[in-house]
Image 1: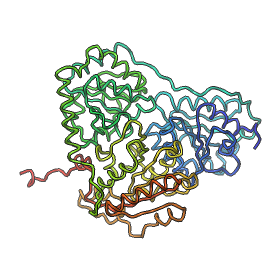
Image 2: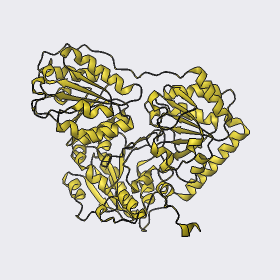
Image 3: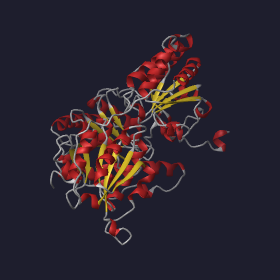
Image 4: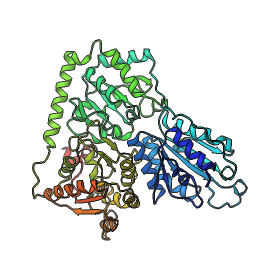
Length: 567
């Protein structure tokens, strides 16, 4: 491939625009990945599975703060990436998908691996563009990056026709990085929202994943301190505020740890910042629809998705939070009698949460519970590690504060509302690659780990010292839990073949350990710290019981009382 090939121009254009990684499988002919290898600022990540590649792109973008590029080709390559892109769309991950299109003379005539990629991706993307002329190439790629990072971040699809790749390349002209645009909300609406918050007896703040690209943590902290209001995060928003902050109450909805749910139940005004308030965030919050909602988002499509706000503030999460704080600082609600009472109530709630879920004592020989295993994991890796999670049954314990507590320097990566099984390991690969200096840990179930195993060779090749905690219930825990509540057979949820994952890890040079006691896990975690320094993967398996169910799941999905029980 010559330096003037269209793929070379494409790679240089993406690097200029601010991308720093290209993920994918090598194509038959040299393509974007090959061209990217010659660009010093681009890292090329070769994966074994396009589905895993999309998840790795999500993890990398979440930690690096930059848009990621996924390189695929028409046909099965593109189709295989779609489940990962479904998750990326749910999360609002800035990903530029670059793919090829077959020669125009073959379309409709049985062309090899032709598929209507735009139609398949349209529900997931912000913009689809077909580059049919070399003169479109630079424009299309730079606009793709702009749309991926601006407004509500998301996926953009760029198809490059075969004819373009065989034509003379356009001239590459260096250009500055694409900027993330920031803007303020309407001043009159900000004052109206501030008035509602100041007058509220029981305001609650919910910080979502949209706060992260805006770097809104400091502004959100200032705002909640002026309000003296409890602050919750969504799963995607975790890490915006240090969870040991006196006003932090953990996660919202399905992941709320009692008794913090009583703060949600009593809320009269809710300020949601950077969240679409998806179903998981609403689970178990039955009074939400009756509250007054102030909704802040950079994407107007977020408003009225789940609930209609009393005030909709369109703008950057950090900028709008500062606007609200500036209005409230003259007479801060936290300094009032109601504000003092709210803060005392939050302190009482936080103390009860810690009492119910205390940190473990020194390692002992008793059998491990999930919460005990998670406490020990956090003790070993610290509160500022990169935490990657799945969304199976037992690993949802990790969403609950104070079972796991993260600070505002942590990176927390979770699936979105799609909860794709097998998301965690490839996402952890992308996250660890974005910041090798930081510990990256994955918490998942045995079924999810097996489904994501195609990402393991990539982790080994990249010398990523991942630590994986597998909570093993011998199958698929969530379907088993639901079937138990319906008194249905769970035989299909149980694995009968012996697990092959440990053998795969060891064959690739990784380390494994099975831990049934706290002492065994503590020793294995110490070994994992050394393996991390050596760039070696460690997989720690802890057997778990079916009845070790997260408190949020028990709270939201408790079986309805029978007539006899009610009597």
